Length: 90
Image 1 (cartoon, helix red, strand yellow):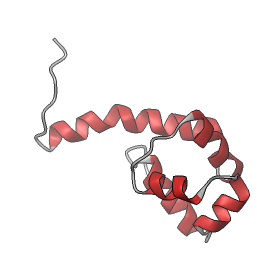
Image 2 (cartoon, one colour):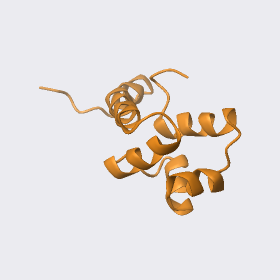
Image 3 (cartoon, rainbow, N blue to C red):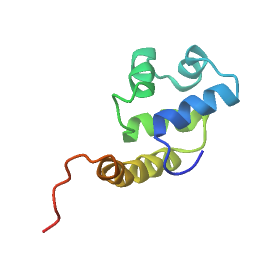
């Protein structure tokens, strides 16, 4: 997994790699399962609170916040490559 992988997809990878279920993640981190499923579906970004809770189980809060920032920075580039509308900087 590289820096161009969404935080949600990276979490899905970690869950699979470490054989951790969503229920186990919730039990260990204190996260609500609805929040985890929404995050995994790409409907929620990494927030400070989510980063802190994910950091209990995998990596650190800073890791998740950095991963979200990188993802948000590269996301418009993916839209441009796909021919999506991109607002010019000037």
